[in-house]
Length: 452
RNA sequence: GGCGACGUGGCCGAGUGGCUGAGGCACCGGACUGCAAAUCCGUUUACCCGGGUUCGAUUCCCGGCGUCGCCUCCA
Image (cartoon, rainbow, N blue to C red; front, side):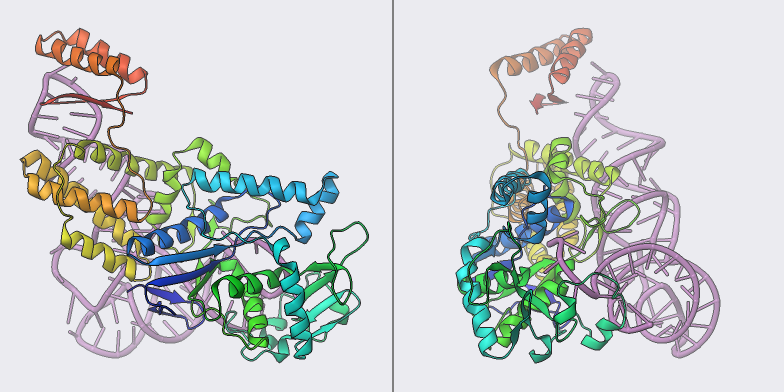
């Protein structure tokens, strides 16, 4: 069974399922106010790999990932550009899913929108006030974090320590809060801003409330896994948990956080630094599988640097796998190699050790190639099937031989004929011709094959 | 100031108290080929610094240096 590092307990431990055979996961989705960047890409790819692996393992996965479609940043941009905020969110969401499709990330089973859950959030906030865990000020409604047992579980830091430093930022509603760490559940709107009705006045929900309502609403109390980027650990996830605890409900049983994408200088890549790298640009420039490969070859909790050389190296690695897939298309099917499958499962179950899993794949490809060369069909078949299964399990689509048009096949045959006749000038000319058309030409003892 | 992560070969990136010290990319040599491509075989390069524990540390402990993250709404 899968073991994962749990941020709350700081140890790798078994992902204990609430219901046998079914996994409930909540993944914090994007705030739709701009194009998706590499950091979004990493998070979604990491959890896509997790999800595919769980499904491949025979589990029924329910993956809820929200769209935050009301937020200060959206309002700011709408104001700046003189557009309707809903115009921005609709467009950004389309772009988001286009990018996700581009990197082959499966759509979550549920995609709730914050704006669809305002009523539930208002109800929850009322409940929190009723329980004495929240209070109203002149600019909104706040959660009193001192009322929450165990606040700081994910931050791994006491309130006092957190306040001891770093506090020179501008804090929303700082003046009237009972405690500096209290956070907004509801923000009263200014004229012209999007607003919903509430018993305390027109306004909009704070960021941390939607995920509580949606996760508990769709997945229920004590759902299995809550995940997202390291940056969400605190305050976002801490504050989600705080609300659930204050409501007396059981929240996520396991917390998973992926590491950052860092730039060439080793600094975190984020919107706040302004060094945004657009995911769509990446897809335009590189085989979209390269990013998945880069991530598969590093551990999800480690920071990963994205560089041109890194992407190109991953691209070459994929080329090798594609060449193998094309070559192995002619191998007779067989049951997957059991030792390899066991290695793969062991690696994945050990905190999603994809680098180890990929090492096993590359090693198997080499052995399979050797077996094909040696005419050992049984070994080649078993390894090939296993490699294909593993790649499918982590969402790595290999490109086999593909469709070869009849006229191209004819040219390949002509190349072989020229070679047989020792007319190498003609053979080379045909090869150049096919290569210039984008075909990869491989000439073996058994004849010439072409693939894209 | 507090909390945390990290520092491995040309690059990326795993891992381990000692055994041939993953894997990818690159480079070099070889096999194969008419030449290539693909494939296979092989060589080369390592564990930030200083102490300590130990028979033995890259791996454990302490200190230092360096990099990075979080500490109120950034995946």
